[in-house]
Length: 267
Image (tube, rainbow, N blue to C red):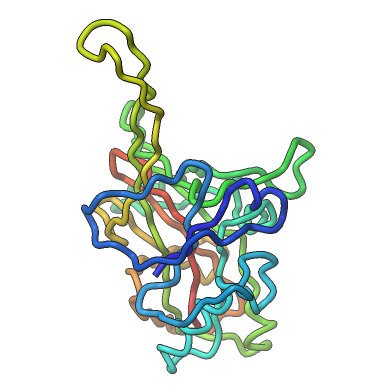
């Protein structure tokens, strides 16, 4: 299930829900997203939505919070969930756009530190006009024109777990994320040649896609990015010692942008 909302009203601070629909299968006809955006209801989660539901503010009663609460209830081995809906400028605050990703090499080769390479909006602390367009945070494709190649990288700020776990911390986690792909058509207005008489606008279609496409990998760090542990989509992972803070990272070694619409971690 997914919610379609009006983009203009989103920037007015009160996004209007236009439609609620079932998520179509992958590789089916996309949905024109011009002037709109999608809010995913998480995979495996289903609950009624009515005229009293809302997208912003994210305050526990919004659709993102409700959706992640239902996801958490589906996995009773976990007691808490942290998530980022990637909807507004303060969500960008939770991303570390200056971070580097430490990639281990076969000894004796030294580790490689990959800089962040992603597309997103501006932080709420920016001196420029702030804002974030939903569904448009993306990991850039790998740059193979340099040596070593630079993959797309997105890294979270360090996430403090003590408000949830106290000083004891925890050692068990599970990541969730939601991806989309896009296809753009061309604006055609012609009075000659093969396209004579055509006058069609450009459309940006959003498509469902695999959550684990070739080239995408996800990681958790229990020690502020010193070491990264690879993990899969909704794949439980346990460390040998408890931690009170984690970082999350996504890496794209593919040839196309990977659009990330939301991510969360159960613990």
